[in-house]
Image (cartoon, rainbow, N blue to C red; front, side, top):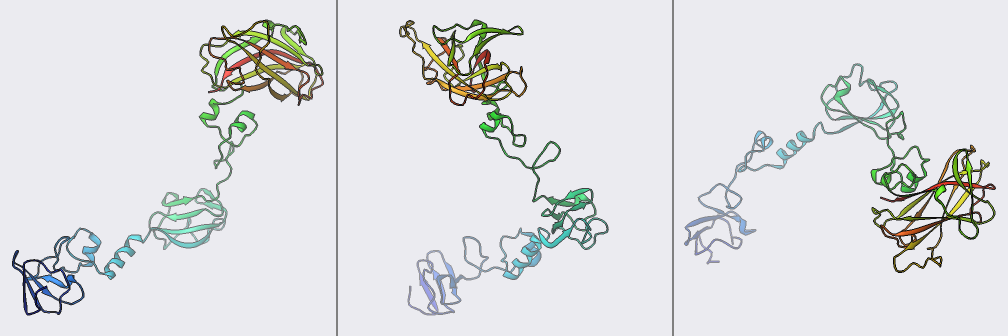
Length: 366
């Protein structure tokens, strides 16, 4: 900085606080003039003669009026804390003003018969259930006036805080069903998503159809063979309840199979029983060309599924067993294979009666 005197000459603008007030600084390069008005910081140098302050130029500014502050269009005048407070108070007025409890049973305070003195943003929390105009309110609901002097239900914002469980007759909240709950088909409160529906393991889902095996087309193995029979014109394969018995089918895997999980649906009746569980075992033997030896059994590990018989004899039952591709002997589309179904000595089988198998169906899980 140049030596302190009444007039300071320099080739640049001030970069330090003035040594005292009342000094005159002249930038001889730009001919800009500055006057010192304090000694704290470099900002105590102001342009002289005074110019309007901007975002890039130091100078003087005028205080904004309240109207100018509220309008928000003047970008040169400055706002004081008082005017800013008035502006903010005006802006937030009517947004939310908690007025306390409202008894919807007795309309206390009066909000829907002859209300008065209510301003936009006034809020009331329902303390006792009842009707508000024509709408039922529960304790915990919140009413917010959407305009001054509201006289209609539409003049209020209603916020429900304690929504009931949705039912067939009540609008309310609910929960998404898991895949297991979707497959079980016994929960009547949760809701099913399109994905869960696509992966539904029961018949009627959107899984892809693969192969169907009718009992009349089955083959009896050389040992422990189940018996063929007929029930009211339905061809059946009968499995004993205490002796392990089995049956075979030969087929070619559907050309649309893409290697996903296979859902094996077994359709069966109980001979006479109306109680007890039946456990089915399912195995697949892949007929890979150049690999399969037809003189030797080479089935993949047995996979099992259990379900209860219907409480009314003669009604059809279904048991679904899910096989991964590995559990299905890594079969591919268009390949020959054999299916072996087993029943009679498996864990969880409690039905003391013959099980009569009528058909088996393959689906690929979506």
